[in-house]
Image 1 (cartoon, rainbow, N blue to C red):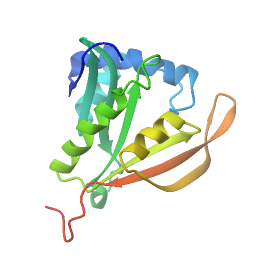
Image 2 (image 1 turned 45 degrees about the vertical axis):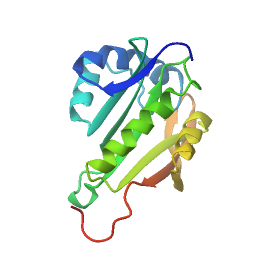
Image 3 (image 1 turned 90 degrees about the vertical axis):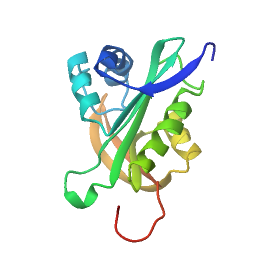
Image 4 (image 1 turned 180 degrees about the vertical axis):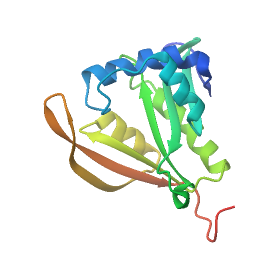
Length: 170
């Protein structure tokens, strides 16, 4: 990877760049089950709603993002979050995803989250490798839960314990 990589918190001003990165995944792959690329104003809403949303820049250009959001709405789940990362096509394998998660996961632990979970359409070796790198463990697969690009798709779930503290949450 050429250039200087930096990771920072996202703002609404990053929504257009995030939408640009995300659109090819929506329109041309099964890694997300969205079927219409959301516009920048929708990504701005998602940035505002996330527990944490980070962007990775190379020489000032946003090339990837990662975020954590609500896993489930019921109160007992509030210490678990769902994480995801997207790296601009053509920029994978250069450490962007690793840099994003290396920043994201400690932030979540510091905020009191106990567990991070991620679901990935299979096959998706890039995502699987990223999550293995950070110690995520497989917890199960939902079979044929999404129809995209002319086929039924499985979603494999992994989780990472962010804290091993016993007792009630802080």
